[in-house]
Image 1 (cartoon, rainbow, N blue to C red):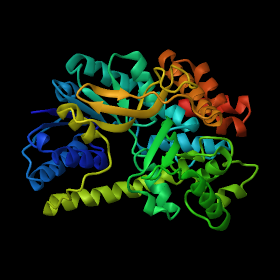
Image 2: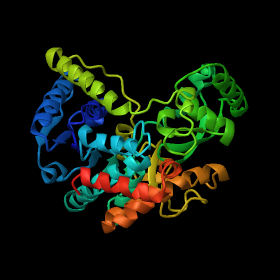
Image 3: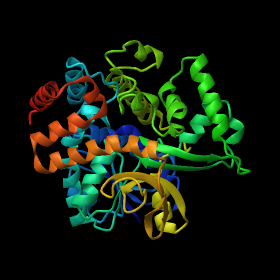
Image 4: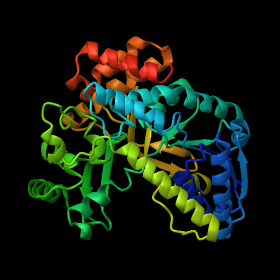
Length: 429
């Protein structure tokens, strides 16, 4: 029997997907699923749903709900983390206060000044989780799904002895979605790709069809034509292809706020031109939560559960570790000589081979200079934010915000400091 601890199990969509994925493997049908959440109501709801999923899939997993992190982690072979310190109401501060200062944000869970404050809230919690892992299950495979991915993983990877790998589902769907958007579905089967960079800004460096033909010349042609002739939901990343030469893993609505190029108060018409949804994500989350609640109620009502595995890496990683059958993922790990022209103390997203020896990152080499430069503008902020969390230094928070590309393009130093002060006060610390 294998034991898997879900920390933040009340995150319904992740827990539902990951449980179904794990139980689809015969090796895990009698595993123990330790569901841990600090909210008793959310814990009760997800436990009921997981029990229905277990029964519907004909599995015999032991379902063990608990509000105790120590109890959940004790003896765990795998730990899956989806915690979020601060709900949507707190998250709104991260978006609304910067907007009052003239810094428009559309998502704010990874970069921008809102990403800085989300990291400051979550880094202490993640380090506490790691210290418990060191105590109760030091050999467990620890997979983190919580954003801001790079900052949280880097803090854990350098301040604890836990081997942390961050996972984001944007990597495994990157080339597939790109080819579909460009009408190149006939190139999907047997394609070969290389993706590397940082989380949410990993670069599709190479893409070849099954016969080894380079697909990028045709991709560049079609992407330029599509952006010139129609409005769609991926215009920012298609501009990346045009001006930087390469496509990026995470969505255009994310990447619009990762640089100073697209959301600019001086050029408000660019929001419509590039179809950027400002201040939409918190509202979308409210609607998603309503949808997840309905799905949970449907599961409890009739017990119907689909068995199709999701594209999340977690279950494949656990299966590869247990069986030794190799599997390739895109993981967020410390840059131990993996990308030559990014800092050694950065958290990077690179191909990793997984087998009975664990998760083994692969050397990539040098990124094209313009891509490394784009990554660096974000890495600088990440490193300063982590230092701010470690030292509790307000000056480091100011410095991180001053170097954040989008914020710096809009505000002067005095306004940046005033905005940070308001964010600190609003969050109670």
